Structure formats: C-alpha cells, structure tokens
Amino acid sequence: MTFDYDLFVIGGGSGGVRAARVAAQGGARVALAEEDRYGGTCVQRGCVPKKLMVFASEYPGHMEDAQAYGWTVHAGGFDWPTFRGKLHAELDRLEGVYRNILGNAGVQTYDTRATVADAHTVALSTGEHFTAKHILVATGGWPVKPDLPGAEEALTSNEIFHLEDLPRSILIIGGGYIASEFACILNGLGVQVTQYYRGAQILRGFDEEARGLIADEMMQNGVDLHLGCNIVEMEKRDGGFRVKATNGDERMFDQVMFATGRTPNTAGLGLEEAGVELGRNGEIVVDDYSQTSVPSIYAIGDVTDRVNLTPVAIREGMAFVDTVFNGNPTPVDHALIPTAIFTQPEFGTIGLSEEEARDQEPVDIYATSFKPMQQSFAGRADRVLMKLIVSKETRKVLGCHIVAPGAGEMIQLAGIAVKMGATKEDFDRTVAVHPTMSEELVTMREPTRSA
Ligand SMILES: Cc1cc2nc3c(=O)[nH]c(=O)nc-3n(C[C@H](O)[C@H](O)[C@H](O)COP(=O)(O)OP(=O)(O)OC[C@H]3O[C@@H](n4cnc5c(N)ncnc54)[C@H](O)[C@@H]3O)c2cc1C
Image (cartoon, rainbow, N blue to C red; front, side, top):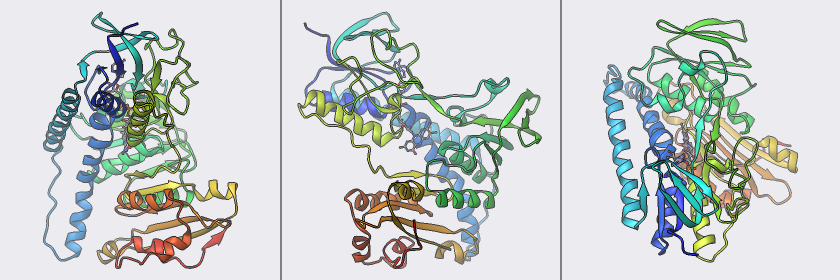
C-alpha cells in the first residue's frame, strides 16, 4: 500500500516539531498539523513566557540589593503593557523560528486541527484526509479547572500572559510548580498574592526539606500561603471575586487563578475509535518506545503523561525517530531527570528525595543550609540549601537538591555527575570553586544524619 506520507504528526509543540524535523531530515516524507501556534505550550504559554516573567519579577529584589551595595537606584513602577508587548513580540518571533525549522526540513505543514480517522488515516478539520505509514500524536495537555460555580470566569496559566492589566490582588489555587512559580512571579511584580493549597506542603513529591525551605522563603518574601486550605465557594462580582475558603476566610480578590492540574489533549481525537488505549486521566498508553496499542500510531510528550517537561518530550521525539525511521529501537530513559522549579528561591533537583531514598535503602544525608554571601551582604535573610542523598552501600549519589539563586543552572551540571553514577567520594575528589555557593556540594565532609 502506498501512503501520502511516511509520517503524519499531530501537534506542533516541543515533541512534535522535533520528531517531524528529524524524520524529514533523514529523508522521510513528513506532514504536521498544528491547530493553534507553532512551538506549543513551552513556547507560547509555558516555559518561555514564564521564564521571561521570572526575569521581570526579580528586578525589584536586584534593585534593593544594588542599593545595599551602595548604588543609587530607584525602581519606579513596572509597566505591564510594555513588558507584555515585548513578550508577545518575542513569542511571535519564536513561532516564526519553529515554522522555518519545519519548512527548511521539508515538512508539509497544515494550520488546522487534525484527528485520527483510522490506523493510517488523519482527518483535517478542512475536510481533507491523508494516509500515513505512521501517525505520531503529540497534542500536549491543557489546564483544568475544578467543577465549581464561578470557576469558568477565573484564570489559568494560559490566560496569565494575556492580561489587560496586572491585578492588585490574586488568589492562586494549587501547590504544584506552576502555582508556586506564578505566586512568586506575581509577588515580585507587585501583586498581592494569596495561595491556597489543600495539601500539607507545596511541591508534593519533591524533597521535604527543600519544599519546607521554599515555602518559608516564599512567605517571607510576601506570598500569603495557606496550606491545608481550599476554595469552597466563589462568585464573580463587580471589581473581582468573592471567595470563601475551607479555613473560614471570606475575601475579595481582583483575580483568581487555578493551577490545579493539566489533562492530556485526547478528547475528540478519534483515538479510542481507532483502537488506541487511553488511561484513566485520558492519557495515551504507550510502551517504552512510545508505541500505542495500535502499532502504526505512536504518542510522545505531555499527551502520554509520563514526565511532563519540554526536554523529555524532545527526547521522546528523537527516540521515536531512531526507533521507527533509523532502524535503531531506542527506549526512552526516564531515570534521573534533572529539573528546575523557578520559584523564588529557585529549586534544582535530580534523583530521589530523602523520603523516597530511605524507603528504598539505608542512606547518608549530607546537607547544609546557609546565608549566601551576595544576599547576606545586602542584608537579606535568604538561606540556601545544598543536599546530597548518598547510598550507604554503594556510596552513589542518589539525589541532589539545591535551593539557591541559579539552582537551575547548577543542577544541570551536577546532574551529569549523578547520571554518570558518581559517588560521594567522586564529589569530594573534585576541588571546590571558591567563593561560590555550589562549592558546598564538594565540601560536606560528615553526614548530617543517616536514614
Ligand atoms: C505554565 C507552564 C510552565 C512550564 N514550564 C516548564 C519549564 O520551565 N520547563 C519544562 O521543561 N517544561 C515546562 N512546562 C511543560 C512543557 O511546556 C511541556 O512539557 C511541553 O510543552 C510538552 O510538549 P508537547 O510536545 O508534549 O506538547 P505541547 O507543547 O503542548 O504541544 C502540543 C501542540 O499540539 C497542538 N494540538 C493539540 N491538539 C491538536 C489537534 N487535534 N490538531 C492539531 N494540533 C493540535 C496544540 O495546539 C499544541 O501546539 C511548562 C508548562 C506550563 C503549562
């Protein structure tokens, strides 16, 4: 049977664009459909605009520090429309870059919604149908709001980049990394931020000591964080939202933002009808090679709800091309993924938390918390945390957790050593870089405790 294409990719985000480009560069005939903007979540409403907002929000702190260092600087006010205009110009530029990447690689693009008609056929919303030897679903995920009257008027991370004006006050609901990052960003931009999280501590699943320090610092920086607290009732009124909380509070907020979870984009895609198995949250069930229950259909990225990060979606896309087009079956390695959470303070982490590690085997914990030189000189009370979780038996570093300015940059590098299986003694053999914060990672001599 001859097909219109060797590969049809649905979704032009991080994973889809990479897979389409690499497959086409290898000589495959590739098409890609994108219903919204090229670049997907990461570029249009995720990592990139968020990080630019993180940068914008850090300037008041830098200016206070500059004054403490003897500079005469005056912050003035933050002009959101100026920033927002530049932000969207940058996102437009990046969308162009993604389009060019695809065009230059010879990928045929369709600016429209696509669904799966059968194991080898894609239907476009224009009415066109195309056959393909392989279909790759890379449709990502979407924020979900709870089923609560009034919630439809509230924001999610999607809308936050498009606000007409910055609110004076905002309630952020959720305790994951998106909720916590936006609490810090908006706090830095001068918005009064209240955060409700129904759990006992934000950033569930990460190292408890690190989570505790981040929450304490966020509160110290002005985020009004309420743990064990959820929303009971909300109503949109003139001038904002009236919100009733489980802790008995009844307050008005200019805006409410839900960061309470994301759902894979599989609704109405025709997947189940084509025989593709979906999981309980609507995610596409795949094997180690990203193959679904229909052999010609593969899925990568957030739509599979494995590890929902841009570099992981890209890895999965590359592994898919190696497996299907390069005759080199490549499973995706999801072990020991370094990652950063851009709260203020920032968090870089890889591997097991202390709690996970001690459930697995006896471990030594090396941890130090101190006031970093630069901030301490400026009179700030901020503390940083450097922590290594070390196997008692093999001495391998099972986890590394850093709460510090620049922790994202640090964990990328420490992550190489951990991924290579470095032992604590390998860390110790490495000469410190002085004076830095990260030198503490190679100078912690005695375990703080064993577990
Ligand atoms: C606020 C926020 C901050 C984030 N920050 C980070 C971070 O700092 N670091 C990090 O690594 N990750 C971060 N992420 C996660 C990261 O953005 C995702 O993991 C990544 O974008 C997933 O890529 P993907 O290719 O699976 O899907 P996406 O990038 O979501 O792309 C899917 C694309 O498919 C399109 N699409 C969907 N259905 C159809 C259809 N039927 N037909 C045609 N097109 C369709 C969509 O329009 C979209 O463009 C963040 C996410 C959010 C929401």
